[in-house]
Image 1 (cartoon, helix red, strand yellow):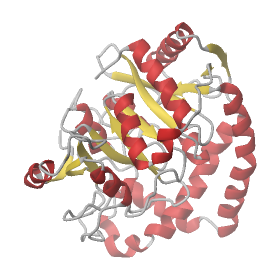
Image 2 (cartoon, helix red, strand yellow; image 1 turned 180 degrees about the vertical axis):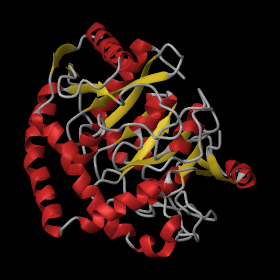
Image 3 (tube, helix red, strand yellow; image 1 turned 90 degrees about the vertical axis):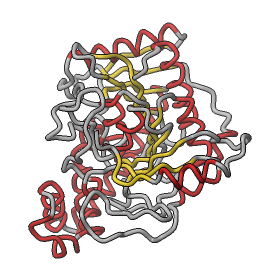
Image 4 (tube, one colour; image 1 turned 30 degrees about the vertical axis):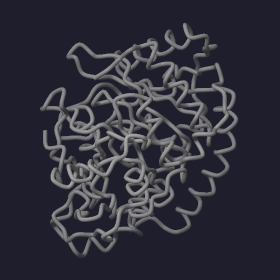
Length: 381
């Protein structure tokens, strides 16, 4: 399955001895995407390059260790967390992709190698692999979890992501990464808005059926359900995100063009080429438009309570791709919290998840609704 790029079983066994029973994450085995720095482990970001590690734990890793999580190793990523597939395979079907870019983290949790795993999301790199691998994947509000010690892809889009088998494990993990969530008094908004897919009807029948299952489960739990089209700002975000991503990626990694030359993976090379061709004016215009669109999105999400959309067009495609991220991209662009919850299996027994989205900083409310949905559907990998 090739989920791991670096394992430290001896170090993990030694670390377990120092974990007290009353620590918040006592007993949690942690996988860490290979763009996060981990003390004593190299950071190579999915490429055969010199170690980029600072030598210290990334902030997120340090916080989880301090709460009792034990690092087992580094999980595989696509090169610099972009689209070129990692060698990892989907544990439900080895001929299919686990998704990208947090391929190893999603696959390792799905296979039971670790309890929780850290990933990242700049476009769709947590929720898409979570859906493909049948686990829970959570992206908190932008800047809720520090990105210090993480190799960037695009500074205004990079989010820390969390993978686990259950929503409860995600909630425990985020409460350590952001302790303010422990005392968050938000009550769930007992409303849900179901995407009717008229904005983009590309989702296959199984993803559409998953939305129907989610709607039924939430309605049974007492949620008021509305079904309708998404605001036009969502489609516009899918266009603008490319400009921001390309420009910021070139700013972060343009030097790799010269260092790696022909060894640069094709997808990453195309992204950097686009970034080099993107003007400052175009970039700043995209950022300004994002700010104006955020107000519309905030109003929509507050009214919706919880938005339910697909995570992807369907189940995991073949492993020569990482899949399509169109349904996830807009919410990363706006920086609002989102979570993938496994809902059903398709005719080939491949997992299908749905994406839940809430307004900015309404992470606790989103997690409560995700827990309700998980309980009502009872889906596990």
